Length: 288
Image (cartoon, rainbow, N blue to C red; front, side, top):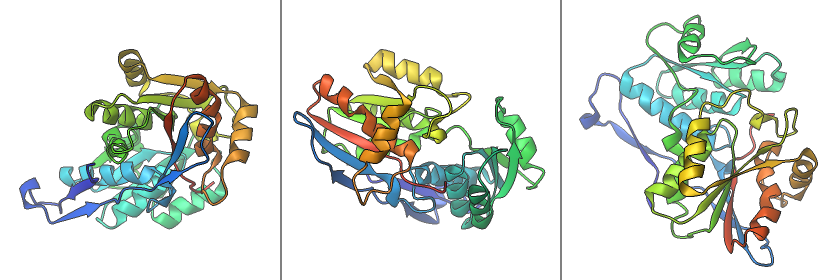
């Protein structure tokens, strides 16, 4: 319904003197094999530029806000995808990125971040890092004005719902993780005045194969609680054996990492609740 535009301005220019408009095209809506009583669709974010995941939306938004503020650098706590997307998007605008990743991150992800142009900081992320700490860590690599884009810009996910407006699904199933995607989609549903219920899914316990959803702290928990209470959205905790089965059930040709495939584990719930049309969010397949 509403195309996803970001107005990007060069440093030193006012918002009214926008130099150009950057657009992320709407992602495909693919029809899946339906359940007996429910039509199924897949919103496929794996085609996004920069990282092949939904994180491209937030990355472009973060760069947009950075340009408006005249920053020289961005700091972000990431499992990999956001850092890669932010580094690639920021590079075009002359902004540098520092990716703060878990100390046990894979060598493949670390190398992919460096290849994208990010400075990489390995850290113990078992405890919360404040925005001030993120900026302090980033300032070791980047001089000048720095923004922390770990949280915020969740509004960048609301246009995913705009793109689904004409479909009018009864339910949208998404991954929870930090809660940014859930919050952005919930706000998109509210903004469009839709009766759609949002169903968030997460691993039942730590150590899941869907490891990118295994967060130690959830900055958006208060927003998740608000949207669930006010708009009757739902949260599901998925046992590990069901997550592994969901990974195996992903249709051929769909690029979908385990942390994205968890949405397929919600199909029994959709049948039980009597939904007639549902959209599963495929957040994509980044570097593992």
